[in-house]
Length: 120
Image (cartoon, rainbow, N blue to C red; front, side, top):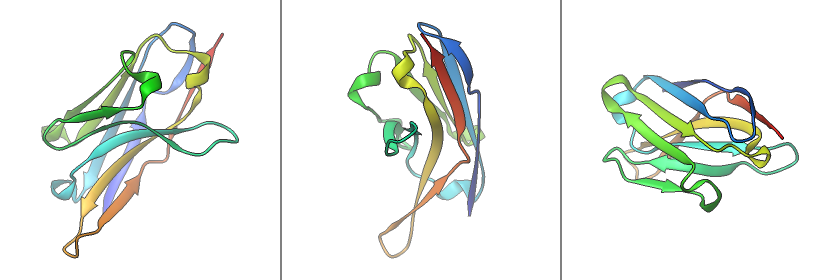
């Protein structure tokens, strides 16, 4: 089992910055990819950014150049630095961790989410 706890959300004006943190506990040695997803009211959850255990990163197009994902394997944490925030970035942001199984599939763990609200 992996337990994820996010922090760092809040209310910010457009153009501002926030830094989200996610701390993992439990069987953290088995985690491979970690990432951030978000879900706005009435919309599906969408990928924001991911990072592999080796440090490879992936971003959705709308956040490229504004958001940066980073990972601290020693402290079992992943971060999302969000700059130049826009009202359309408003959503609940969820931390995600993938753990491979012996059968070739992957277990997906989610945090409880943290609200990010960007005012215009």
